[in-house]
Length: 337
Ligand code: 13P
Image 1 (cartoon, protein in one colour):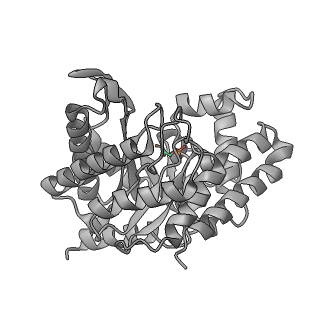
Image 2 (cartoon, protein in one colour):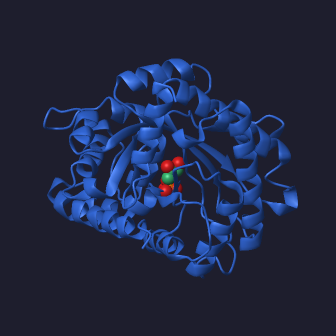
């Protein structure tokens, strides 16, 4: 194995350390604005930095976090103590990562579906991010289920799989481990069987594209949705054991054993659901490849922390305690007994 392939393998294995997961703190300025609005906090640079600092500085949380995904602004930001966020994370043994996609745009051939922008200039940005200290990256593709309209269309599946594979190989050429995230949204009234079928179909297309592009499977991380009924389906909130089983069935049919880690997104599940379903997957007797199954949550790690903080400096210790509670519970859930 050449040195670059070996370095990617080492980083991917570290991200997939059992008992650890990734914090997705890579909300774009617009998305973090929506989160801050829910707690009545203005979307200023100062408040964004304060929120990220309280997360990165939270006592004891680093033991549960192999990596943190940052947004461009955050990767370049400095905390109150004068250290950059990248330096703060590294000092705690946490690997800094970077969101490199530029969000979704309408897919011209099926304009109610989306493609993800950001391939233009990606090679150069990866070089810069590596120099700034990032060692992994994230690209989110978004697919939606609408059976009446035939979504996801064959076009949306093929285009998003191809873009994920191009992104992955561009990252790997530049020494960044790609987190490959094909998110199938929970929106809709579909049943869990439909989500299982679509998840298999999407993951199958993604891994076919990754192979076609020559991606290094042991130098990447998969970040999928869990297999759930649509959020408007009557059983949307039931059956954590069913979600765990269906998710494992989707993954074991399609994900190569060489992939070291499958780190789930939370996608609108509650904090407790995201933890419990992960825990059940790691306790399941369904035979599967030895991937680490862990978390790369955004909302399911930050929701109660944000509420406890409310944008006030005096609430930082309570907010950090809430964040620690989620880190600890998810860390325990990511261990296979
Ligand atoms: P959620 O866990 O809130 O879905 O966010 C994860 C993520 O990184 C989405 O791209």
